[in-house]
Length: 404
Image 1: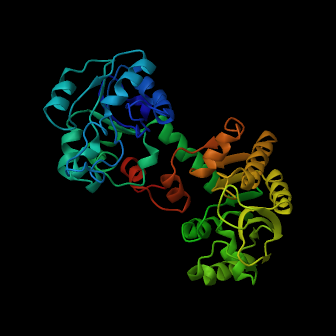
Image 2 (image 1 turned 180 degrees about the horizontal axis):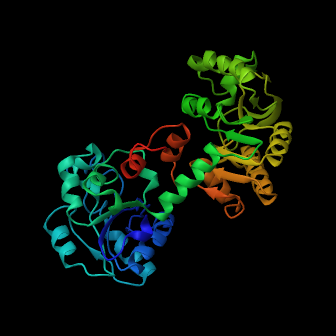
């Protein structure tokens, strides 16, 4: 456990993949803020801390001359802000496993903090390279993974490096631990009724999630573009709404299986439809099963909002992943924001709510309700894979083959 790491040089994988403007200034430091409790606890326990992170995908976004843009993707841009937040000078190594990193790690004393250069400057990082990981491991005496957002990647700094540390010398950071605990709370021991709200564009993106959730939930609320493939499977006329023809049979099969599994699946009975995909489109409300030709559904309608919100407010466990409509366009945002409010209302009455990453997090934040739900995941793709029932490499690297 993190609390047992004392008086060591601790190698900590954080997620400092933050957005930078053209002047290399941080425009959103949420990921850095989330890592601070782990960093502070390790420092308070007498450790020296060596931070490693990626920033962007530098080997996939080369400069015009074919070289790596080491200026644009350098973690040196993080140093001033992190130093200010911690109120102490953060040291910086100009490489990841080279002379600068090694020499700086040797000089570290208790209470010191060092950040290594972008791990993805090395092609071995994303390959999970054993030699690269071995060099990283030599920099520290213990390893902590606090980057849940990359836990689904079997990279050198998130997974392979853990092999070089004994069980007592590796641990999850506080953020990682919190993400895992909250995801397991939903999937392993939900209070009932348990309602999952799934939105987003495509059924194909959510197949494994839907199938896994069917084993656990009482209610499955579906919105967003993916709903209309299901409505098509039920014989509806959906105009030019988003349709994945290859998944109509899957949708029909899922509806049949839901009857045997005692899961109630809900689709929008009405929709806000538009004559084009645009913020300034002409819009009107339509029965979701009788959408006019050349019109497309871009949000759930008022009847659907009432039905969905009623179910949500009666739930004791709520999982939400994906928006209910094109909420970037104001006139098609009502469904998503109404659901956000309903989740907050249910939480205030004692329900447990997990916002499972992606655009649903943005919707909650834009609603100003981020403090009114139980937990907001920072994980994105990692949380999605966890909820799909997959074993995440970054978790297995610490826990071994126990449950995840």
